[in-house]
Amino acid sequence: MKKNKLSPAARREENWGWIMVAPTIIGLLVLNIWPFIQTIYTSFCEHLGFGRYKFIGLANYVEMFQTPEFWKATWNTILFCILTVPVGLFLSLLVAMLLNAKIKFKGGFRTIFFLPMVCAPAAVTMVWRWIFNADYGILNQLFGTDIKWITDPNVVMISCAIVAIWSNIGYDAVLLLAGLQNIPKTLYEANSIDGAGPVKQFFTITLPMVSPTLFVVMIMRLMASVKVYDLIYMMVEETNPAVTSVQSLMYLFYRESFVAGSRGMGSAIVLWTVLLIGLVTVIQFYGQKKWVNYDV
Image (cartoon, rainbow, N blue to C red; front, side):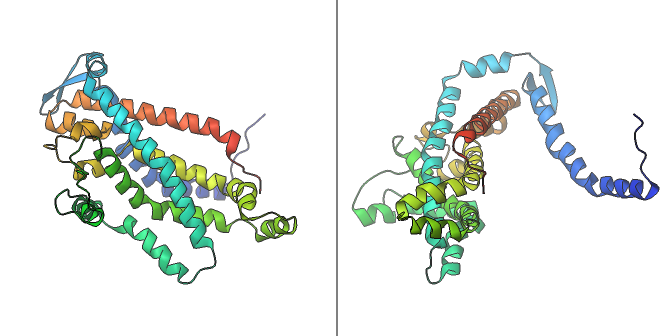
């Protein structure tokens, strides 16, 4: 079959389409794809300084997998995801349902919950470091405790998880609120006529109907948790004795690449992190078939 030729007008329209998307495509190639290719190559090299590299094969990966600090950082990253994602999703859904209810000053509450997202991460971290201070922090003063929230290796991960959950609840709640508001009210009315209470309505209507939005939020939060760096960097100083108990893969990447100067090892850590994100994403998309409902 002969391919249908486009008319001159259609051809011009297609050309204009390519012109309009060209900046985005060029930016994607220059800022994302090419650096990623360079990262793959660098992971097989030794950095000699001044932009010079020596190809050493799998040496960086062999050293990485034999380093206890690397496996500790991997476990810290996984633990951070376990601590932040389920609790964060639960609280975000709870806040979204409260904001979706018939309450006064609904718009004001939405703004208050969303405020942490528009605040500078450094400012947020500084406030929480003051709250967690073991000597004069408001948390220990309020409860009369003497917990070393940031310097105790057994507690520091929980402290960072609390800050991460608090910072993201507002943003996730706004997304979930949009999903809740798209649920037809007639479904609740019909279910009420059948004698269903609020709890049954939540599990038979609300949760299934908001599951697509919940799935998207879960993917976003998991990816952000795997890539966590700035929060830990600003909460825990390098001289802190508890740094190894909370050091994530991205924090280890920073130390290897910019402190130790081993950019080959840092690139290997980045690719390992990308592999983890890809694995988590595949598992999520496979598991979503069992609990995500796309039927309206």
